[in-house]
Length: 191
Image (cartoon, rainbow, N blue to C red; front, side, top):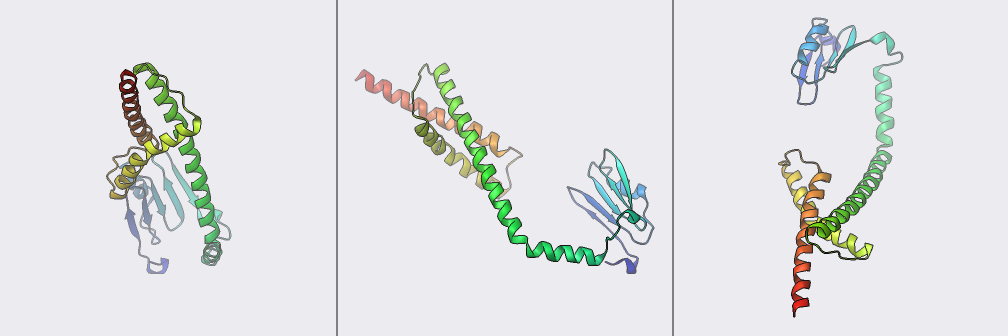
């Protein structure tokens, strides 16, 4: 589509809507009506850009975009593509560090919850070295994490966040293991 054709289009999705009309037939109200179903809309009209975020509507004139041209956009895309590998490595490193920290916090939280529930409801206090406790937590998280990954790949997650899912399922898994361990210890102590 080009502005020379005086043709436009409306793109609708679950995330946002785009109204493109270089002919001047569409108005701000047309863009606002596209967001009536709770989906933000962007209108690229003949004289200005309209952004309707449901909460408020903003209007931006093309005059405020000094130096904004097709050549500048193409130059930006070329520079971005040449440095794309740096962006990719940065995203991977950030993702790795973030996920590592989240898993460490999750392991500490699960270990604390399991020890607390074991002491309160099973009337047993088990002293473990912190390394062993973290290893047991990792083992308890393996099956739930694998199941969560399969659920995510199949797209049937139902909106449950990974942190909450792993917290609940891994704690339950760990508690089952602790119950069996305590039952085995009690059986051995009787013999």
